[in-house]
Image 1: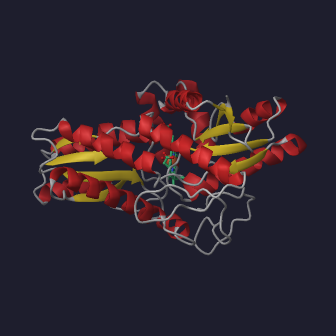
Image 2: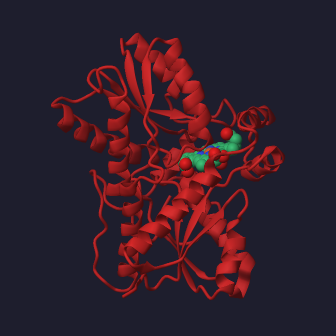
Image 3: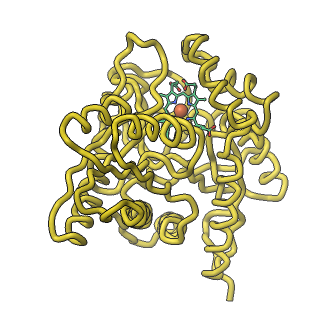
Length: 365
Ligand SMILES: CC1=C(CCC(=O)O)c2cc3nc(cc4[nH]c(cc5[nH]c(cc1n2)c(C)c5CCC(=O)O)c(CCC(=O)O)c4C)C(CCC(=O)O)=C3C
Ligand SMILES: [Fe+2]
Protein backbone atom coordinates (compact mmCIF):
# COMPACT_ATOMS: atom_id res chain seq x y z
CA UNK A 1 0.00 0.00 0.00
CA UNK A 2 1.27 3.45 -0.84
CA UNK A 3 1.43 6.05 1.90
CA UNK A 4 1.00 9.76 1.33
CA UNK A 5 2.41 12.86 2.96
CA UNK A 6 -0.95 14.58 3.24
CA UNK A 7 -1.63 17.49 3.09
CA UNK A 8 1.37 17.99 0.79
CA UNK A 9 1.38 17.34 -2.95
CA UNK A 10 5.13 17.86 -3.38
CA UNK A 11 8.39 18.55 -1.57
CA UNK A 12 10.37 21.49 -2.97
CA UNK A 13 14.13 21.41 -2.48
CA UNK A 14 14.98 25.11 -2.54
CA UNK A 15 18.64 26.10 -2.80
CA UNK A 16 21.05 28.88 -3.62
CA UNK A 17 21.94 27.95 -7.21
CA UNK A 18 25.31 28.38 -8.85
CA UNK A 19 26.84 28.94 -12.29
CA UNK A 20 27.26 26.00 -14.70
CA UNK A 21 29.98 27.56 -16.87
CA UNK A 22 32.11 30.62 -17.58
CA UNK A 23 29.31 32.66 -19.16
CA UNK A 24 27.05 32.16 -16.15
CA UNK A 25 29.45 33.53 -13.55
CA UNK A 26 28.86 37.26 -13.88
CA UNK A 27 25.05 37.14 -14.26
CA UNK A 28 24.90 34.73 -11.31
CA UNK A 29 26.99 37.05 -9.12
CA UNK A 30 24.79 39.98 -10.15
CA UNK A 31 21.72 38.02 -9.03
CA UNK A 32 23.30 37.18 -5.69
CA UNK A 33 24.55 40.65 -4.87
CA UNK A 34 21.72 42.83 -6.19
CA UNK A 35 21.13 45.60 -3.64
CA UNK A 36 23.72 44.25 -1.18
CA UNK A 37 26.44 46.87 -1.52
CA UNK A 38 29.21 44.32 -2.11
CA UNK A 39 32.34 46.09 -3.40
CA UNK A 40 33.30 45.47 -7.05
CA UNK A 41 36.74 44.10 -6.17
CA UNK A 42 35.15 41.46 -3.94
CA UNK A 43 32.96 40.39 -6.87
CA UNK A 44 35.98 40.10 -9.14
CA UNK A 45 37.74 38.04 -6.48
CA UNK A 46 34.79 35.68 -6.01
CA UNK A 47 34.40 35.44 -9.80
CA UNK A 48 37.98 34.17 -9.88
CA UNK A 49 37.15 31.42 -7.39
CA UNK A 50 34.50 30.19 -9.84
CA UNK A 51 36.79 30.57 -12.88
CA UNK A 52 39.35 28.34 -11.15
CA UNK A 53 36.70 25.64 -11.54
CA UNK A 54 35.89 26.55 -15.19
CA UNK A 55 33.03 28.76 -14.06
CA UNK A 56 31.17 25.78 -12.68
CA UNK A 57 29.97 25.59 -9.12
CA UNK A 58 29.63 22.06 -7.77
CA UNK A 59 26.41 23.06 -5.99
CA UNK A 60 23.93 22.14 -8.75
CA UNK A 61 25.12 18.56 -9.11
CA UNK A 62 25.13 18.22 -5.33
CA UNK A 63 21.54 19.39 -5.15
CA UNK A 64 20.57 16.91 -7.86
CA UNK A 65 22.25 14.16 -5.84
CA UNK A 66 20.26 15.24 -2.79
CA UNK A 67 17.06 15.38 -4.83
CA UNK A 68 17.62 11.80 -5.98
CA UNK A 69 18.51 10.65 -2.47
CA UNK A 70 15.33 12.21 -1.04
CA UNK A 71 13.27 10.49 -3.74
CA UNK A 72 14.96 7.17 -3.04
CA UNK A 73 14.32 7.46 0.71
CA UNK A 74 10.64 8.28 0.15
CA UNK A 75 10.33 5.34 -2.22
CA UNK A 76 12.04 3.04 0.28
CA UNK A 77 9.37 4.01 2.81
CA UNK A 78 6.57 3.61 0.26
CA UNK A 79 5.61 7.29 0.44
CA UNK A 80 4.21 8.86 -2.71
CA UNK A 81 5.50 12.46 -2.67
CA UNK A 82 7.13 14.09 -5.72
CA UNK A 83 10.37 15.98 -4.99
CA UNK A 84 11.08 19.06 -7.11
CA UNK A 85 13.97 21.55 -7.20
CA UNK A 86 14.21 25.32 -7.50
CA UNK A 87 16.89 27.94 -6.78
CA UNK A 88 17.10 31.54 -5.64
CA UNK A 89 19.97 32.71 -7.85
CA UNK A 90 20.23 30.42 -10.88
CA UNK A 91 18.30 27.99 -13.10
CA UNK A 92 16.08 26.21 -12.38
CA UNK A 93 14.51 29.21 -10.66
CA UNK A 94 11.94 28.46 -7.98
CA UNK A 95 9.20 30.39 -9.74
CA UNK A 96 9.54 28.20 -12.87
CA UNK A 97 9.49 25.01 -10.81
CA UNK A 98 6.39 26.16 -8.94
CA UNK A 99 4.64 27.12 -12.18
CA UNK A 100 5.21 23.59 -13.51
CA UNK A 101 4.13 21.98 -10.24
CA UNK A 102 0.95 24.03 -10.27
CA UNK A 103 0.25 23.04 -13.89
CA UNK A 104 0.48 19.41 -12.76
CA UNK A 105 -2.09 20.12 -10.06
CA UNK A 106 0.02 20.70 -6.93
CA UNK A 107 -1.96 22.74 -4.43
CA UNK A 108 0.18 22.59 -1.30
CA UNK A 109 3.95 22.27 -1.27
CA UNK A 110 6.37 21.78 1.62
CA UNK A 111 9.74 23.50 1.14
CA UNK A 112 13.10 22.32 2.42
CA UNK A 113 15.79 25.00 2.11
CA UNK A 114 19.40 23.84 1.95
CA UNK A 115 20.60 26.00 4.84
CA UNK A 116 20.62 24.15 8.14
CA UNK A 117 20.83 27.20 10.42
CA UNK A 118 18.44 30.10 10.82
CA UNK A 119 19.59 33.62 9.94
CA UNK A 120 18.60 36.23 7.39
CA UNK A 121 20.71 34.52 4.69
CA UNK A 122 19.65 30.97 5.46
CA UNK A 123 16.01 31.47 6.32
CA UNK A 124 14.38 34.87 5.99
CA UNK A 125 15.84 35.51 2.53
CA UNK A 126 14.38 32.24 1.26
CA UNK A 127 11.02 33.23 2.68
CA UNK A 128 11.11 36.56 0.85
CA UNK A 129 12.14 34.69 -2.30
CA UNK A 130 9.24 32.23 -2.01
CA UNK A 131 6.79 35.04 -1.30
CA UNK A 132 7.97 36.81 -4.46
CA UNK A 133 7.48 33.62 -6.51
CA UNK A 134 3.97 33.15 -5.11
CA UNK A 135 3.18 36.77 -5.89
CA UNK A 136 4.42 36.37 -9.47
CA UNK A 137 2.27 33.28 -10.05
CA UNK A 138 -0.82 35.00 -8.70
CA UNK A 139 -4.03 32.93 -8.59
CA UNK A 140 -2.32 29.75 -9.80
CA UNK A 141 0.31 29.78 -7.04
CA UNK A 142 0.34 26.75 -4.77
CA UNK A 143 0.25 27.24 -1.01
CA UNK A 144 3.82 27.04 0.34
CA UNK A 145 4.86 25.80 3.77
CA UNK A 146 8.44 25.69 5.03
CA UNK A 147 10.25 23.15 7.14
CA UNK A 148 11.92 24.47 10.29
CA UNK A 149 15.74 24.83 10.29
CA UNK A 150 17.29 21.38 10.66
CA UNK A 151 20.60 22.18 12.42
CA UNK A 152 19.57 20.18 15.51
CA UNK A 153 17.95 17.33 13.65
CA UNK A 154 19.50 14.06 14.89
CA UNK A 155 20.24 12.89 11.34
CA UNK A 156 22.14 16.06 10.44
CA UNK A 157 24.18 16.10 13.65
CA UNK A 158 25.00 12.38 13.55
CA UNK A 159 26.02 12.57 9.89
CA UNK A 160 28.44 15.38 10.82
CA UNK A 161 29.73 13.34 13.74
CA UNK A 162 30.37 10.31 11.51
CA UNK A 163 32.21 12.52 9.00
CA UNK A 164 34.47 13.91 11.75
CA UNK A 165 35.23 10.40 13.05
CA UNK A 166 36.17 9.32 9.52
CA UNK A 167 38.36 12.38 8.91
CA UNK A 168 40.06 11.83 12.28
CA UNK A 169 40.86 8.25 11.30
CA UNK A 170 42.94 9.54 8.35
CA UNK A 171 45.26 11.53 10.66
CA UNK A 172 48.45 10.05 12.03
CA UNK A 173 47.47 8.65 15.43
CA UNK A 174 43.77 9.24 14.78
CA UNK A 175 41.71 11.81 16.66
CA UNK A 176 43.83 11.61 19.81
CA UNK A 177 45.60 14.94 20.28
CA UNK A 178 43.57 16.68 17.56
CA UNK A 179 41.75 19.98 17.81
CA UNK A 180 38.28 19.99 16.23
CA UNK A 181 37.88 23.16 14.23
CA UNK A 182 34.21 23.65 13.39
CA UNK A 183 33.62 26.07 10.52
CA UNK A 184 30.63 27.93 9.21
CA UNK A 185 29.83 30.89 6.97
CA UNK A 186 30.47 34.27 8.57
CA UNK A 187 27.61 36.76 8.66
CA UNK A 188 27.55 40.45 9.61
CA UNK A 189 27.24 41.13 13.37
CA UNK A 190 23.92 42.89 12.72
CA UNK A 191 22.59 39.74 11.04
CA UNK A 192 23.73 37.70 14.06
CA UNK A 193 21.85 40.08 16.40
CA UNK A 194 18.71 39.87 14.26
CA UNK A 195 18.93 36.07 14.21
CA UNK A 196 18.83 36.11 18.01
CA UNK A 197 15.79 38.41 18.27
CA UNK A 198 13.22 35.71 19.07
CA UNK A 199 15.27 32.59 19.78
CA UNK A 200 18.78 31.19 19.84
CA UNK A 201 20.91 33.05 17.29
CA UNK A 202 22.97 31.76 14.40
CA UNK A 203 26.15 31.50 16.48
CA UNK A 204 24.31 29.80 19.36
CA UNK A 205 22.77 27.23 17.00
CA UNK A 206 26.28 26.27 15.84
CA UNK A 207 27.60 26.22 19.41
CA UNK A 208 24.88 23.74 20.31
CA UNK A 209 25.80 21.41 17.45
CA UNK A 210 29.45 21.74 18.46
CA UNK A 211 28.64 20.79 22.07
CA UNK A 212 26.62 17.74 20.99
CA UNK A 213 29.39 16.47 18.71
CA UNK A 214 32.13 17.24 21.26
CA UNK A 215 30.27 15.19 23.87
CA UNK A 216 29.91 12.22 21.48
CA UNK A 217 33.62 12.36 20.59
CA UNK A 218 34.53 12.52 24.29
CA UNK A 219 32.47 9.36 24.76
CA UNK A 220 34.38 7.66 21.94
CA UNK A 221 37.81 8.58 23.29
CA UNK A 222 37.24 8.61 27.04
CA UNK A 223 38.36 12.24 27.23
CA UNK A 224 37.27 15.55 25.71
CA UNK A 225 39.08 17.04 22.72
CA UNK A 226 39.70 20.77 22.47
CA UNK A 227 37.49 22.47 19.90
CA UNK A 228 36.47 25.86 18.58
CA UNK A 229 34.15 27.51 16.07
CA UNK A 230 35.56 29.72 13.30
CA UNK A 231 34.08 31.46 10.26
CA UNK A 232 34.85 31.60 6.55
CA UNK A 233 33.78 33.46 3.42
CA UNK A 234 33.22 36.92 4.88
CA UNK A 235 32.48 39.59 2.30
CA UNK A 236 30.89 43.04 2.25
CA UNK A 237 32.56 46.26 3.28
CA UNK A 238 35.74 45.48 5.27
CA UNK A 239 34.72 48.13 7.84
CA UNK A 240 31.50 46.26 8.65
CA UNK A 241 32.00 43.80 11.52
CA UNK A 242 31.28 40.14 10.73
CA UNK A 243 31.48 37.09 12.99
CA UNK A 244 35.05 36.14 13.89
CA UNK A 245 37.56 34.57 14.13
CA UNK A 246 38.22 33.98 10.47
CA UNK A 247 39.26 30.37 9.95
CA UNK A 248 42.72 31.31 8.58
CA UNK A 249 43.54 33.70 11.44
CA UNK A 250 42.32 31.08 13.85
CA UNK A 251 44.56 28.36 12.41
CA UNK A 252 47.49 30.73 12.95
CA UNK A 253 46.45 31.23 16.58
CA UNK A 254 46.08 27.50 17.11
CA UNK A 255 49.63 26.97 15.89
CA UNK A 256 50.86 29.59 18.38
CA UNK A 257 49.05 27.62 21.10
CA UNK A 258 50.95 24.49 20.10
CA UNK A 259 48.23 22.68 18.13
CA UNK A 260 49.75 20.38 15.48
CA UNK A 261 46.73 18.45 14.23
CA UNK A 262 43.23 19.57 13.34
CA UNK A 263 40.02 18.28 11.84
CA UNK A 264 38.26 20.98 9.86
CA UNK A 265 34.55 20.26 10.25
CA UNK A 266 32.36 22.37 7.94
CA UNK A 267 29.16 21.99 9.97
CA UNK A 268 27.69 25.18 8.48
CA UNK A 269 27.35 23.69 4.99
CA UNK A 270 25.48 20.67 3.72
CA UNK A 271 27.56 20.04 0.60
CA UNK A 272 31.00 20.80 -0.82
CA UNK A 273 29.94 23.90 -2.72
CA UNK A 274 32.24 26.79 -3.53
CA UNK A 275 32.78 28.02 0.02
CA UNK A 276 34.02 24.59 0.98
CA UNK A 277 35.83 23.80 -2.27
CA UNK A 278 37.72 27.10 -2.30
CA UNK A 279 37.66 28.80 1.11
CA UNK A 280 38.38 25.61 3.03
CA UNK A 281 39.99 23.09 0.66
CA UNK A 282 42.25 25.63 -0.98
CA UNK A 283 42.75 28.52 1.46
CA UNK A 284 42.36 26.99 4.92
CA UNK A 285 44.27 23.82 3.96
CA UNK A 286 47.12 26.01 2.65
CA UNK A 287 47.14 28.01 5.87
CA UNK A 288 47.35 24.81 7.89
CA UNK A 289 50.20 23.48 5.77
CA UNK A 290 52.14 26.75 6.00
CA UNK A 291 51.86 26.54 9.78
CA UNK A 292 52.99 22.94 10.03
CA UNK A 293 49.58 21.67 11.12
CA UNK A 294 48.31 18.32 9.87
CA UNK A 295 44.73 18.91 8.75
CA UNK A 296 41.91 16.63 7.60
CA UNK A 297 38.73 18.13 6.25
CA UNK A 298 35.61 16.28 7.34
CA UNK A 299 33.01 15.66 4.64
CA UNK A 300 29.93 17.78 4.52
CA UNK A 301 26.81 15.70 5.15
CA UNK A 302 26.04 15.50 1.42
CA UNK A 303 23.77 12.51 0.83
CA UNK A 304 24.78 10.46 3.86
CA UNK A 305 21.98 8.07 4.69
CA UNK A 306 21.51 9.37 8.25
CA UNK A 307 21.15 12.93 7.00
CA UNK A 308 18.70 12.08 4.21
CA UNK A 309 16.66 9.83 6.49
CA UNK A 310 16.53 12.62 9.10
CA UNK A 311 15.20 15.06 6.52
CA UNK A 312 12.49 12.64 5.44
CA UNK A 313 11.60 12.04 9.10
CA UNK A 314 11.16 15.81 9.45
CA UNK A 315 8.98 15.98 6.33
CA UNK A 316 6.70 13.16 7.47
CA UNK A 317 6.59 14.51 11.02
CA UNK A 318 5.50 17.93 9.72
CA UNK A 319 2.90 16.37 7.42
CA UNK A 320 1.51 14.42 10.38
CA UNK A 321 1.30 17.60 12.48
CA UNK A 322 -0.41 19.47 9.66
CA UNK A 323 -2.90 16.61 9.48
CA UNK A 324 -3.73 17.09 13.15
CA UNK A 325 -1.55 14.40 14.78
CA UNK A 326 0.28 15.27 17.98
CA UNK A 327 3.85 14.44 16.92
CA UNK A 328 6.77 16.03 18.77
CA UNK A 329 9.74 17.16 16.66
CA UNK A 330 12.92 15.12 17.13
CA UNK A 331 16.06 17.05 18.10
CA UNK A 332 19.47 16.57 19.71
CA UNK A 333 21.35 19.08 21.85
CA UNK A 334 20.11 21.58 24.39
CA UNK A 335 17.97 23.74 22.10
CA UNK A 336 14.32 23.11 21.34
CA UNK A 337 13.09 22.58 17.79
CA UNK A 338 12.30 25.83 16.07
CA UNK A 339 8.56 26.37 15.66
CA UNK A 340 6.95 25.34 12.36
CA UNK A 341 5.56 28.85 11.98
CA UNK A 342 7.53 32.04 12.47
CA UNK A 343 6.85 33.76 15.78
CA UNK A 344 5.80 37.41 15.62
CA UNK A 345 8.73 39.81 15.71
CA UNK A 346 11.18 37.43 14.10
CA UNK A 347 10.92 38.82 10.58
CA UNK A 348 13.78 41.23 10.77
CA UNK A 349 16.84 41.76 8.70
CA UNK A 350 18.62 43.84 11.29
CA UNK A 351 17.85 43.94 14.98
CA UNK A 352 15.09 46.46 15.46
CA UNK A 353 14.50 47.09 11.77
CA UNK A 354 11.60 45.58 9.84
CA UNK A 355 12.27 45.42 6.10
CA UNK A 356 8.67 45.56 4.89
CA UNK A 357 9.33 42.89 2.24
CA UNK A 358 6.63 40.20 2.27
CA UNK A 359 7.68 36.83 3.68
CA UNK A 360 6.04 33.47 4.01
CA UNK A 361 5.21 32.19 7.44
CA UNK A 362 7.76 29.58 8.36
CA UNK A 363 10.83 29.03 10.46
CA UNK A 364 11.93 32.26 12.03
CA UNK A 365 15.15 34.02 11.27
C1 LIG B 1 24.85 32.18 6.00
C2 LIG B 1 25.13 31.97 4.54
C3 LIG B 1 24.96 30.81 3.82
C4 LIG B 1 24.34 29.57 4.40
C5 LIG B 1 25.10 28.37 4.32
C6 LIG B 1 24.49 27.50 3.24
O1 LIG B 1 23.34 27.71 2.83
O2 LIG B 1 25.19 26.61 2.77
C7 LIG B 1 25.36 31.06 2.47
C8 LIG B 1 25.35 30.13 1.39
C9 LIG B 1 25.87 30.31 0.11
N1 LIG B 1 26.45 31.44 -0.41
C10 LIG B 1 26.84 31.21 -1.70
C11 LIG B 1 27.44 32.16 -2.55
C12 LIG B 1 27.60 33.52 -2.27
N2 LIG B 1 27.28 34.17 -1.11
C13 LIG B 1 27.57 35.53 -1.19
C14 LIG B 1 27.37 36.49 -0.22
C15 LIG B 1 26.95 36.29 1.12
N3 LIG B 1 26.67 35.06 1.72
C16 LIG B 1 26.25 35.28 3.04
C17 LIG B 1 25.88 34.30 3.95
C18 LIG B 1 25.61 32.96 3.64
N4 LIG B 1 25.74 32.37 2.40
C19 LIG B 1 26.27 36.68 3.26
C20 LIG B 1 25.88 37.32 4.55
C21 LIG B 1 26.72 37.29 2.09
C22 LIG B 1 26.86 38.78 1.84
C23 LIG B 1 25.76 39.29 0.98
C24 LIG B 1 24.39 39.07 1.58
O3 LIG B 1 24.07 39.73 2.57
O4 LIG B 1 23.66 38.22 1.07
C25 LIG B 1 28.08 35.74 -2.51
C26 LIG B 1 28.49 37.10 -3.08
C27 LIG B 1 29.94 37.25 -3.14
C28 LIG B 1 30.53 37.31 -1.74
O5 LIG B 1 30.27 38.29 -1.09
O6 LIG B 1 31.14 36.32 -1.36
C29 LIG B 1 28.13 34.49 -3.17
C30 LIG B 1 28.62 34.21 -4.57
C31 LIG B 1 26.49 29.87 -2.05
C32 LIG B 1 26.73 29.21 -3.43
C33 LIG B 1 28.06 28.54 -3.44
C34 LIG B 1 28.39 27.90 -4.77
O7 LIG B 1 28.19 28.50 -5.82
O8 LIG B 1 28.85 26.74 -4.77
C35 LIG B 1 25.90 29.31 -0.95
C36 LIG B 1 25.35 27.92 -0.79
FE1 LIG C 1 26.76 33.19 0.73
